[in-house]
Length: 482
Image (tube, rainbow, N blue to C red; front, top):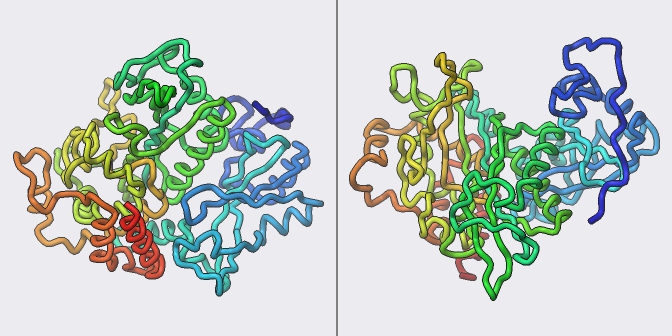
């Protein structure tokens, strides 16, 4: 396999750090160590010095397109002035090609990629030294492009904060399958017994650890990684062994959390290609076996304090009630952003720890919404922020639009009459599920509920009507092709 033909040069040594960052292994982000500054403090002069010190030949403007995947526009800066022009002005692009599925037409398609310097990282897969920087999108009027996934999630986050005082943080659990020819595997796992398995009983452990290290050096908020329960044995028809893994990220504001998911999938696909494996985020790689979810944990934050499901007295917090009520009411239309593959319905229908109805519960892995256990030290100190888990999305999810939709659901939930009665009725501890708690079972049904609830997503100008129109059209087309 091809490898980058360059090595990162040692960070410039300084007699003493002026801000406490230092030159050791921390912080995990290698650019913060090299520049001796936190990402929020980076300026053009820092980037210019980095480019010169590391002899960086390429600048890659990266961004998330209308399909949810990472896109790239490459430059070879000629001199510092050219580099400044790129970093401060960005560059134009064809919006209809990037966001045609989200409502942009060719007649008004010019957009500008606007770099965000604090997102810079050294491309770990480039054959020559390359600095990558994530971008937002600007329209012809100089304002954030309404159809851009980045714009949508930032707008939703800000609207939620202004109208409720809640800052919504999130983290994604990225489950994925690695496939390898059975003749190349020396040790074998056991079907549906892969949870927390270690080498030699999983072949993807080394790649997973490489991904964790790369993500940390890129500045991505990473929590942990492990092998997951799914294990699919090879057959005569398909002599490939599939084993499941998971990388869980750390909490971050919605826009950063969504971007971290897209970049994590990009890293995993690159590593798999370089290691001669197949990587799949498909909701189900083989029917009858465990599928891959893309669960999200949410932490409603008020005045800098992460509020989980319950307060010190054991009652649901106000933000938790709004989040749960919003999700149980809008879970079905949220599938337009969180369950976009035909196998999404297979995953839900076959169960295997996938939700089957709209319900919430404590610790319950069959519920749509779950309040997980909160880790504590022996002295009772909470060691990780409490969260509320949304278990409906899968590996086909569009994280930016999904997280924006969740923020809109919280604002909508403020209008809920008898919210306590709703929560009682949808509690998974109840012996029977209400008839109206069934999840959609086809793209056509998802299109119908999105059409019914589109006003909730368009509220506050967060989702442009033409974007919702396009989403519904795509769902209808998928339904017609089934």
